[in-house]
Amino acid sequence: MKLKYWSCSLKLAHQWTIARELQPDGTGGTLTEEVVFVELRDGDGAVGLGETSPSERYKETIQTVLSFLQKIDPSRLSFRDVTGSMAYLEELAQGNAAAKCAVNVALVDGAARIAGKSVHDFLGLGFTEGRHVTSFSIGIDTPDTIREKVRMAEPYPILKLKVGSPHDLANLAALREVAPTKPIRVDANEAWKTKEQALNQIERLASDSNIEFVEQPMPVNTPKSDWAWLKAHSPLPIMGDESYVNSGDIERCAGLFHAVNVKLVKAGGITGAFEALKTARRAGLKTMLGCMIESSLLITAAAHLAELTDYLDLDGNLLITNDPFRGVSAVRGVLSFANAPTKTGLQVVARS
Image (cartoon, rainbow, N blue to C red):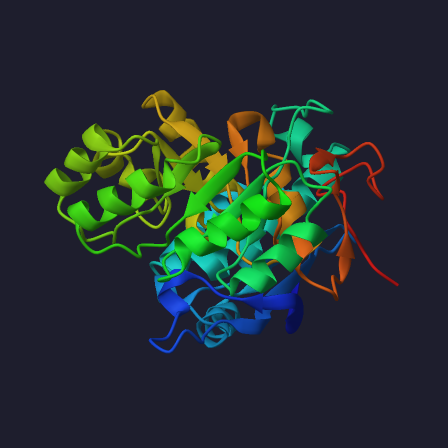
């Protein structure tokens, strides 16, 4: 097996700001996102592609990903033994979920290609056309820019609004001026530090009758008793994101949230996300597949797991202007493989 990897700077159409990046003066965010792509090629010419978008929130960076990839002995990887290959990566180093994500996605891609199947069929899930709709995310900004972003998002039927600034209600009002009735998902990214503050903010937001849920209103290290109190008192469903990294977090999360957000980068790839989704559903939680800022390669990889979800937030590729890959489409938010550029594996190709 040969292993090739390279970094790439994805360019965002707008400044991207979430609560934990917001500075006291109201500035913050980024116009670029660094990702890493992986290519595996075996001796028979079979190829698998992968991607990761590491986050410092989970103590991973481009540098830690590249450092991990440099340690890999490619001869220990095989498309015909994804489980054994992942066990080798676990032996190599604990953690490093983002780095392992890139390799795992490439392994599953190659394995499915060899089997002559799409990833969703290879995993026994299938994919129901016309059923799976992604939200479109609106980052923290000024009300005027929020209006502009919402106008640009007109084709998408569901919006996700990042909150955690002093201007949350003004931003929601600005959104509603342009899109008065669209369902909204609110994401606080750990912004509110106490259960009382979180409840106060949620109650104010809940005056809008078309908000579906609130994501991660408080920090991960908030006491379980406070999470339980908030769940019991909140007028809106609570979804865990940063609190639910992988299936190992289910015992902590099962009674504290109505739903959880699973991301390939957090869970270590397709295999880990598959298990995280199944585990959450067995525990009675609703599930969402989310993303970082990613290209169509990793977004498409996640889309193959759509049958295990209640909600989708796979829009990272819709927020960038230099997507290097083509894969799943999202016409008016509806994910589709009907016109995918290939029929096997991830069903992605590089743009020429």
